[in-house]
Length: 234
Image (cartoon, rainbow, N blue to C red; front, side):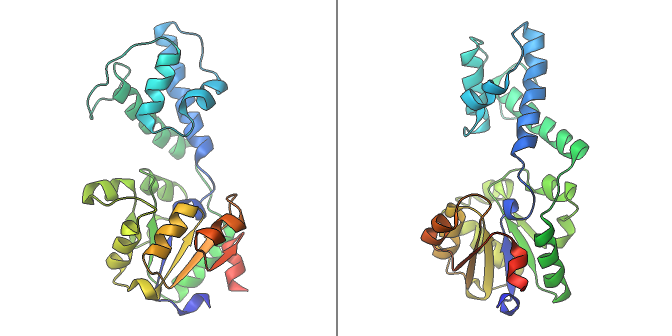
């Protein structure tokens, strides 16, 4: 079944182990420096869950500063430092890249085996992710050269593409690979991504259960749900 499509699109979190711990480390290193410079009490793990978790980057910064009674200007897009909310957020992103390069990240072994098989068949591959860090994550995992295209948060913003559950990023990736959606397979671990692929009319939508639950992925529109992509080669 898996070999008969012309192109294959992967979500980043189905390819590499979760990056959330790297993000948490980057937040800690950033706020450790900031709070030390301000004479504030040290950053706590609870700060992440109370102010940062689940929020967009700049909103999280503003929330944590407010919780500490620290007032800073919003700042500009290019700020990189401790003088503004955007500067702190941008600095965290740079620290994330440093942490990624220093500590690395591992691909899922079963996914690598599937990529090896598709490479042997000369199938074109792309990453479709809402992350703005897809490129450095793939490089750190040693997988960037496996994918002809990466349609991530940076790419989507540049081209004005709405994110998942809209199908636009998947459709653009298929276009970059020169493939028709109905001849393309999608691998996704989130319900919003499954819904996006289904809305785009893709030929096969595989749910990869990394914690969302098989029932939720099936309900979102997955044709089949697996716990590991290696199952598709059996």
